Length: 123
Image (tube, rainbow, N blue to C red; front, side, top):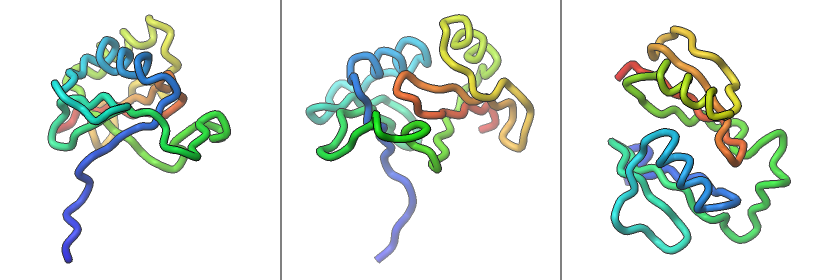
């Protein structure tokens, strides 16, 4: 038996349409043509990323201080400062402003469901 690493990442969200619209419009991700019921999958590489309706028993409102605490979700972007400026201008909460680091220029924002997402520019 061999585990080769992450193969799919999905965030459980309160409002699927709102979350999908945010990741599509504000981050520029593209939806794949087909997805399982209750999910929107994006054409990200090398690992597919999705937003989905919560699984039974998941209460996102009970997650404190926010959903996903303890998990680091990083997305690659070739224009980190531009994305930061666009998100900040649209009112998206910025947790950490852009700063250089070992993975290039990085910043962290809070998505509509409260997940902290870090963006970096070093491939």
